[in-house]
Image (cartoon, rainbow, N blue to C red; front, side, top):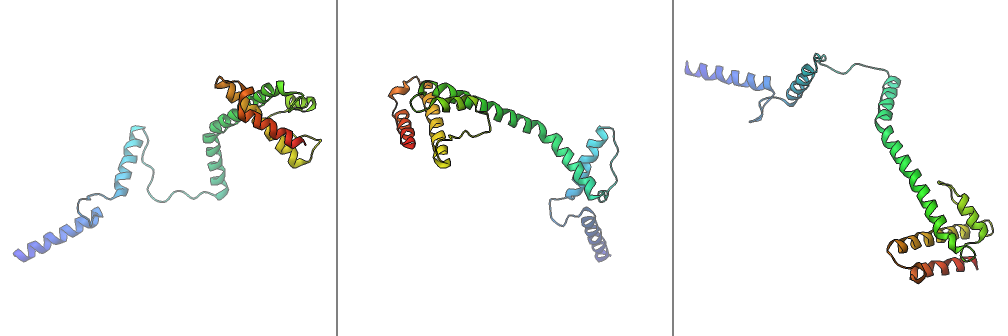
Length: 179
């Protein structure tokens, strides 16, 4: 009789472990059941019923792709707009600094024609100097921009750009590119 009772209790224990999907100690409920419980609680609080269990409904690829694309567009569009606005404002600021700092360089490191092009220059465009080859033109424009930003940095620090060694170095670099 004793043997039969222990056999029955072992069967019940095994059956319980199979039902709870817990072969390991300390885990009484499977993870899927816990997640389902949380979803059920949230849906009931919102006044909705639990969706039917099973695989998600089959929808055509094109429908799923369009739905996901629209959702992503709605989700990320504000961030893309903010980034585009920041790029535009940054580009305008850069062009303004370049024009302001190179204004007193006209006749020296910047020719009057180049300064007129600097004033007409827009954002997202690269200014070129037509009198020299393409590579030298790019290097010259880059050096002029570096000169402008260095002068702004020196002025922001409260120093005189005329005594700054890097400003003098950029002027020498521009003169060497013109030769």
